[in-house]
Image (cartoon, rainbow, N blue to C red; front, top):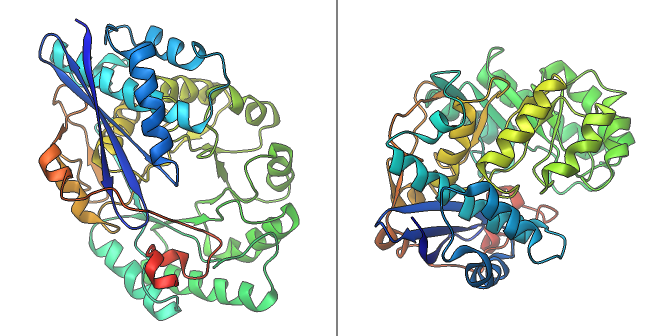
Length: 385
């Protein structure tokens, strides 16, 4: 079997563009992969145009390790976010083809399932007015849909420092959310790499009474020694990893034990097998894995293949019940959250089918998402003008 054609499709919303790659083979089987880029969608498409000529066309979709190696190293330049995201899309599509050809779900090819369900946590739910009352009402809506975990960044446009008045307002938001969801629902605290180590430590102590399940990206991701400084001074679990795009770059986190929960993005770190390899290393360091997942249903399905086959997989992020829920229509078989969990699927491949006609209803947009702009949490660039 050989890859004969590469299609790219972009599904657009005001704050995110989702890129889908469909691989065609000479035996009639197709596979699909997906990633979400912020501000680099056209660059990703340009890379894929070159990569299909240099690496993809004519390749055996069963020889996934070889194709990934050639795409990552065969152009000599160091692979970053764009290249690793392009690899991820192609890699997922190859797994999809392989699973379909063999008549098994991808998780079966990764060693078999270790669980029948993966817990989900909601994100993208707090696009309301930024008040305690509005956040409490929105949080109650999340729980009413069956979720038993949700994530929030209450810090506005904070950067490095957070003045006392803004700190107290952020606390009031978290207090309202915790009261609304009760003591048993997990509450993940997102910091988006905003703060200096000293500020992150101070805020972690301020938020501790509300029992966050973790603090996420407390400091910018480029300096992992700063992350270790935070981890050494707080008693809460520390999560990070969504903006680390190469499995090798996690080495420093393992060496320093600077995080408890790793958050690779399957769509940015080179795909399913790269994530599974990282999870195996994390297991030897007694760390959990909870992938970053801000994509659509294909990326969710790919992340779940890892989840069902990985013993140290904690939970999976999910946006698509709250932010741009309509985009789920671009695939059939979209994974759904029921009573707070994704159930295992036995459908061959990734278990989803991409619909290009439905995708055409969501053309590429000039998507923009600036986490340091007032009102970013509404995920509507027009509302900030």
